[in-house]
Length: 139
Length: 113
Image 1 (cartoon, rainbow over the protein chains, first blue to last red):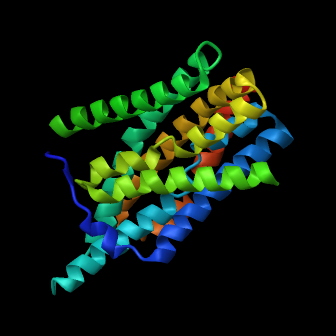
Image 2: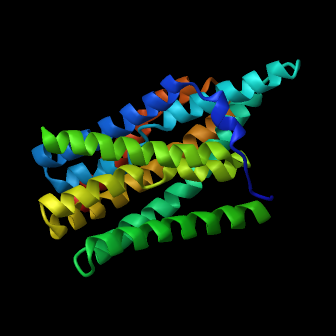
Protein backbone atom coordinates (compact mmCIF):
# COMPACT_ATOMS: atom_id res chain seq x y z
CA UNK A 1 0.00 0.00 0.00
CA UNK A 2 1.28 3.45 -0.93
CA UNK A 3 2.03 5.95 1.85
CA UNK A 4 0.48 9.39 1.38
CA UNK A 5 0.83 12.61 3.35
CA UNK A 6 -1.92 15.23 3.60
CA UNK A 7 -2.23 18.30 5.81
CA UNK A 8 -6.05 18.37 5.65
CA UNK A 9 -6.55 16.07 8.71
CA UNK A 10 -4.84 18.77 10.80
CA UNK A 11 -7.81 21.09 10.17
CA UNK A 12 -10.15 18.53 11.77
CA UNK A 13 -8.22 18.68 15.03
CA UNK A 14 -9.38 21.28 17.58
CA UNK A 15 -6.90 23.42 19.57
CA UNK A 16 -7.84 21.69 22.82
CA UNK A 17 -7.02 18.31 21.28
CA UNK A 18 -3.48 19.55 20.48
CA UNK A 19 -3.26 21.02 23.99
CA UNK A 20 -4.36 17.68 25.52
CA UNK A 21 -1.60 15.80 23.71
CA UNK A 22 0.98 18.41 24.76
CA UNK A 23 -0.09 18.27 28.41
CA UNK A 24 -0.27 14.45 28.57
CA UNK A 25 3.10 14.14 26.80
CA UNK A 26 4.69 16.69 29.14
CA UNK A 27 3.09 15.13 32.22
CA UNK A 28 4.31 11.59 31.46
CA UNK A 29 7.85 12.94 30.83
CA UNK A 30 7.77 14.66 34.24
CA UNK A 31 6.23 11.54 35.83
CA UNK A 32 8.95 9.25 34.38
CA UNK A 33 11.61 11.58 35.81
CA UNK A 34 9.97 11.67 39.25
CA UNK A 35 9.54 7.86 39.35
CA UNK A 36 13.23 7.43 38.45
CA UNK A 37 14.21 9.84 41.25
CA UNK A 38 12.03 8.09 43.83
CA UNK A 39 12.43 4.40 42.84
CA UNK A 40 15.61 4.41 40.75
CA UNK A 41 16.34 4.26 37.00
CA UNK A 42 15.30 0.62 36.53
CA UNK A 43 11.69 1.42 37.50
CA UNK A 44 11.67 4.88 35.92
CA UNK A 45 12.93 3.46 32.62
CA UNK A 46 9.79 1.33 32.21
CA UNK A 47 7.72 4.51 31.84
CA UNK A 48 9.77 5.72 28.85
CA UNK A 49 7.57 3.37 26.81
CA UNK A 50 4.28 4.06 28.58
CA UNK A 51 1.39 4.41 26.08
CA UNK A 52 0.43 7.78 27.55
CA UNK A 53 -1.15 9.52 24.57
CA UNK A 54 -2.38 6.31 22.95
CA UNK A 55 -5.94 6.52 24.39
CA UNK A 56 -6.25 10.19 23.34
CA UNK A 57 -4.94 9.48 19.82
CA UNK A 58 -7.13 6.41 19.29
CA UNK A 59 -10.22 8.29 20.47
CA UNK A 60 -9.40 11.18 18.15
CA UNK A 61 -8.97 8.86 15.17
CA UNK A 62 -12.25 7.12 15.94
CA UNK A 63 -14.07 10.47 16.24
CA UNK A 64 -12.59 11.98 13.06
CA UNK A 65 -13.34 8.87 11.00
CA UNK A 66 -16.95 8.86 12.24
CA UNK A 67 -17.35 12.59 11.49
CA UNK A 68 -15.90 12.12 7.99
CA UNK A 69 -18.52 9.49 7.18
CA UNK A 70 -21.34 11.58 8.66
CA UNK A 71 -20.28 14.65 6.64
CA UNK A 72 -20.40 12.51 3.51
CA UNK A 73 -24.00 11.61 4.45
CA UNK A 74 -23.15 7.97 5.12
CA UNK A 75 -23.76 5.77 8.15
CA UNK A 76 -20.43 5.58 10.03
CA UNK A 77 -21.08 2.01 11.22
CA UNK A 78 -17.87 0.65 12.77
CA UNK A 79 -15.54 2.71 10.58
CA UNK A 80 -14.24 4.68 13.56
CA UNK A 81 -13.40 1.56 15.58
CA UNK A 82 -11.77 -0.09 12.56
CA UNK A 83 -9.59 3.00 11.95
CA UNK A 84 -8.53 3.06 15.62
CA UNK A 85 -7.80 -0.69 15.47
CA UNK A 86 -5.58 -0.16 12.40
CA UNK A 87 -3.78 2.61 14.27
CA UNK A 88 -3.22 0.17 17.16
CA UNK A 89 -1.83 -2.40 14.70
CA UNK A 90 0.64 0.25 13.49
CA UNK A 91 1.55 1.08 17.09
CA UNK A 92 2.26 -2.61 17.75
CA UNK A 93 4.68 -2.60 14.80
CA UNK A 94 6.22 0.67 16.00
CA UNK A 95 6.69 -0.82 19.46
CA UNK A 96 9.02 -3.47 17.99
CA UNK A 97 11.05 -0.51 16.69
CA UNK A 98 10.84 0.91 20.21
CA UNK A 99 12.44 -2.27 21.62
CA UNK A 100 15.28 -1.84 19.09
CA UNK A 101 15.59 1.84 20.12
CA UNK A 102 15.92 0.94 23.81
CA UNK A 103 18.53 -1.79 23.17
CA UNK A 104 20.59 0.57 21.00
CA UNK A 105 20.48 3.44 23.50
CA UNK A 106 21.49 1.04 26.29
CA UNK A 107 24.59 0.01 24.33
CA UNK A 108 25.43 3.30 22.60
CA UNK A 109 24.92 5.88 25.37
CA UNK A 110 28.01 4.97 27.45
CA UNK A 111 30.19 4.73 24.30
CA UNK A 112 29.14 7.68 22.09
CA UNK A 113 28.13 11.34 22.54
CA UNK A 114 24.55 11.63 23.87
CA UNK A 115 23.18 13.31 20.74
CA UNK A 116 24.72 10.67 18.45
CA UNK A 117 23.38 7.78 20.55
CA UNK A 118 19.86 9.25 20.66
CA UNK A 119 19.66 10.38 17.03
CA UNK A 120 21.16 7.11 15.77
CA UNK A 121 18.73 5.07 17.88
CA UNK A 122 15.76 7.18 16.72
CA UNK A 123 16.76 6.51 13.10
CA UNK A 124 16.98 2.80 13.96
CA UNK A 125 13.46 2.96 15.50
CA UNK A 126 12.15 4.41 12.23
CA UNK A 127 14.04 1.91 10.04
CA UNK A 128 12.90 -1.13 12.08
CA UNK A 129 9.29 0.11 12.26
CA UNK A 130 9.11 0.81 8.52
CA UNK A 131 10.67 -2.58 7.71
CA UNK A 132 8.09 -4.40 9.84
CA UNK A 133 5.26 -2.35 8.32
CA UNK A 134 6.48 -3.16 4.80
CA UNK A 135 6.82 -6.84 5.65
CA UNK A 136 3.28 -6.99 7.11
CA UNK A 137 1.91 -4.98 4.17
CA UNK A 138 3.14 -7.66 1.75
CA UNK A 139 1.44 -10.49 3.67
CA UNK B 1 11.16 23.31 39.48
CA UNK B 2 13.13 24.48 36.47
CA UNK B 3 13.94 20.87 35.53
CA UNK B 4 10.28 19.83 35.83
CA UNK B 5 9.24 22.71 33.59
CA UNK B 6 11.93 21.80 31.06
CA UNK B 7 10.80 18.15 31.05
CA UNK B 8 7.18 19.27 30.63
CA UNK B 9 7.95 21.52 27.64
CA UNK B 10 10.41 19.16 25.91
CA UNK B 11 8.24 16.07 26.48
CA UNK B 12 5.06 17.85 25.39
CA UNK B 13 6.72 19.23 22.26
CA UNK B 14 8.20 15.90 21.15
CA UNK B 15 5.00 13.94 21.85
CA UNK B 16 2.95 16.56 19.93
CA UNK B 17 5.41 16.53 17.00
CA UNK B 18 5.25 12.74 16.57
CA UNK B 19 1.44 12.82 17.01
CA UNK B 20 1.22 15.41 14.19
CA UNK B 21 3.23 13.08 11.93
CA UNK B 22 0.74 10.35 12.79
CA UNK B 23 -2.11 12.66 11.77
CA UNK B 24 -0.82 13.54 8.31
CA UNK B 25 0.11 10.09 7.01
CA UNK B 26 -2.11 7.50 5.38
CA UNK B 27 -2.85 4.58 5.54
CA UNK B 28 -3.84 4.43 9.21
CA UNK B 29 -1.69 1.37 9.91
CA UNK B 30 1.39 3.30 8.75
CA UNK B 31 0.38 6.41 10.73
CA UNK B 32 0.02 4.19 13.80
CA UNK B 33 3.79 3.62 13.81
CA UNK B 34 4.15 7.15 15.21
CA UNK B 35 1.96 6.21 18.16
CA UNK B 36 4.93 4.16 19.38
CA UNK B 37 7.56 6.80 18.63
CA UNK B 38 10.27 7.25 21.26
CA UNK B 39 9.10 10.80 22.06
CA UNK B 40 9.01 10.59 25.89
CA UNK B 41 12.24 8.54 25.83
CA UNK B 42 14.14 11.10 23.71
CA UNK B 43 13.15 13.97 26.00
CA UNK B 44 13.83 12.06 29.22
CA UNK B 45 17.09 10.39 28.19
CA UNK B 46 18.58 13.62 26.80
CA UNK B 47 17.86 15.48 30.06
CA UNK B 48 18.82 12.56 32.31
CA UNK B 49 22.17 12.03 30.55
CA UNK B 50 22.87 15.73 31.11
CA UNK B 51 21.86 15.86 34.79
CA UNK B 52 22.53 12.33 36.17
CA UNK B 53 25.15 11.04 33.74
CA UNK B 54 25.19 8.67 30.79
CA UNK B 55 25.37 5.42 32.80
CA UNK B 56 22.24 6.34 34.76
CA UNK B 57 20.43 7.15 31.48
CA UNK B 58 21.67 3.86 29.96
CA UNK B 59 20.14 1.99 32.93
CA UNK B 60 16.83 3.70 32.19
CA UNK B 61 17.14 2.63 28.54
CA UNK B 62 17.74 -0.99 29.64
CA UNK B 63 14.49 -0.94 31.61
CA UNK B 64 12.74 0.72 28.71
CA UNK B 65 13.10 -2.61 26.84
CA UNK B 66 10.56 -4.04 29.31
CA UNK B 67 8.24 -1.07 28.83
CA UNK B 68 8.46 -1.39 25.03
CA UNK B 69 7.64 -5.13 25.14
CA UNK B 70 4.66 -4.24 27.34
CA UNK B 71 3.64 -1.60 24.76
CA UNK B 72 3.68 -4.29 22.07
CA UNK B 73 1.47 -6.60 24.14
CA UNK B 74 -0.89 -3.72 25.06
CA UNK B 75 -1.34 -2.35 21.52
CA UNK B 76 -1.78 -5.87 20.09
CA UNK B 77 -4.56 -6.51 22.65
CA UNK B 78 -6.21 -3.14 21.80
CA UNK B 79 -6.05 -3.97 18.08
CA UNK B 80 -7.53 -7.44 18.54
CA UNK B 81 -10.34 -6.31 20.87
CA UNK B 82 -11.34 -3.39 18.63
CA UNK B 83 -11.42 -5.49 15.46
CA UNK B 84 -13.21 -8.36 17.18
CA UNK B 85 -15.79 -6.57 19.35
CA UNK B 86 -15.93 -3.01 17.85
CA UNK B 87 -15.80 -1.43 21.31
CA UNK B 88 -15.29 2.34 21.79
CA UNK B 89 -11.60 3.31 21.56
CA UNK B 90 -11.47 5.21 24.86
CA UNK B 91 -13.01 2.32 26.80
CA UNK B 92 -10.66 -0.31 25.32
CA UNK B 93 -7.47 1.75 25.56
CA UNK B 94 -8.11 2.71 29.20
CA UNK B 95 -9.43 -0.66 30.38
CA UNK B 96 -6.38 -2.43 28.94
CA UNK B 97 -3.86 -0.17 30.73
CA UNK B 98 -3.39 -2.85 33.44
CA UNK B 99 -2.09 -5.13 30.65
CA UNK B 100 0.81 -2.70 30.11
CA UNK B 101 1.41 -2.32 33.86
CA UNK B 102 1.37 -6.07 34.61
CA UNK B 103 3.58 -6.93 31.58
CA UNK B 104 6.10 -4.13 32.23
CA UNK B 105 6.44 -4.84 35.95
CA UNK B 106 6.43 -8.60 35.33
CA UNK B 107 9.43 -8.22 33.00
CA UNK B 108 11.05 -5.84 35.50
CA UNK B 109 10.54 -8.30 38.36
CA UNK B 110 11.85 -11.28 36.36
CA UNK B 111 14.79 -9.75 34.47
CA UNK B 112 15.53 -6.09 35.15
CA UNK B 113 15.55 -5.34 38.88
